[in-house]
Image 1 (cartoon, rainbow, N blue to C red):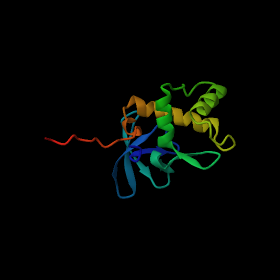
Image 2 (image 1 turned 90 degrees about the horizontal axis):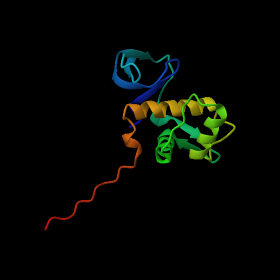
Image 3 (image 1 turned 135 degrees about the horizontal axis):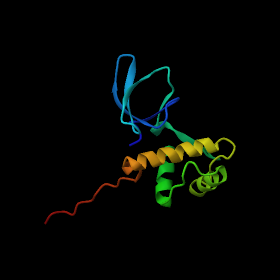
Image 4 (image 1 turned 120 degrees about the vertical axis):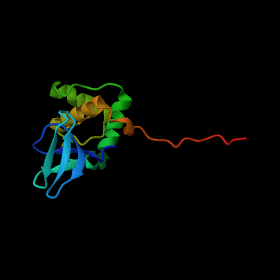
Length: 136
């Protein structure tokens, strides 16, 4: 689910990978729907590769999105720093308080809200194989 969704440094919002060109990739903004080239000089990260530091290791962004979804509520990314910290601690109490900044938390909440609005969070729930009853 998150493999085709990209974050590009210096560009607001998230992007969907469309195709590869000779010297770039073509991406489509999830916010505006416009297609633009993204060059190798930009720092491009797939959301599937992003993780958050914890006291014992790292947690993938997909897992954080699952926790937000299970919580059933979302905080506005424009809320105060204290509100953002307390909500993030509620969904992820083991995060590393020295290496995860409020700006990182805001970005995670913005991304979650954008993906939720575009109905792209369907894959955050564990997919269980369906069992069929044997036919008689």
